[in-house]
Image (cartoon, rainbow, N blue to C red; front, side, top):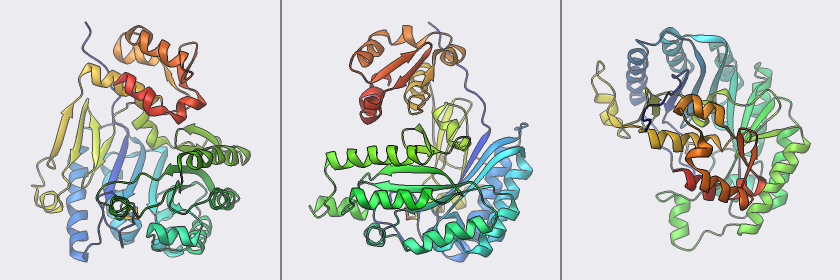
Length: 383
Ligand code: SF4
């Protein structure tokens, strides 16, 4: 039986900035407020991590994604140092997508102009909702008006490719709230991409604690499903194409960076708690800031590594790739794994097709609309 497989080498890099002004009620990310000197130490360690990881890399990157946390909480000069470390170490293809996450509370016109000058050509803005009461419920430290002002300032600073994050299934949210947020966002020409996530209540968050105490009232399942359909319809009417379960774009503006995750291509990850996938090894850096900062600059950052075996990699190809609306192509699977997925999972695929969750088009398998609703029932068959 074949045990070797081919993973495409990393051409995308993620850099994690774990600093935030305050903690949102739903947030389970590694993020916290930071003192100035911690930020400085962090940038210095990050530069070293980036420069040493790229020693053997010879092909320019297709994408850089600076996420968090709130990267825009850093000074422009600090962001510039990170950008320069990546650029000088790996280089970028001329058309490379270079995204930075910005939150409305730290995206002044001046800062946005500086980010554009540094070389960033795409923003991801944490809008979440354009309802002030919902933003307060979420614990977001900004208003709807500030979010719209940031989007306007970004356009004036020269950004014409902006992704906005939206959330649904929120406590107290109605379908009308969601419609209003969608319609106002898509009326802006600089919004080329929407990432829309239903609220997931995680342990250890403020929402998690409220739920445990029985104090968190969420929309029921039918309302949440209605919101998902509403999103699909409203965004389709506005010319956005759903290209992944949670992502919609105007044609030609699909995110390059996330494509690496869904295609089982390698990617670099730098910074506290960042994940990478290189040479078939998944690694997650330490979550402990002291350990990260104190790790010797000439050694790899501490963390947990796991070498994917053949079965895991084949399963990941299926469940990550099926998130894409274009589905998974057996020709690509054969290239990477030397066999057909139709032969590897014949019963599972037949059963999922019979249940109306998957559809076959030639060599391609895709989720149906029902399959997107019940995606976890599909994914579990391949892992
Ligand atoms: S801004 Fe983002 S990373 Fe920061 S606390 Fe809120 S959700 Fe978490």
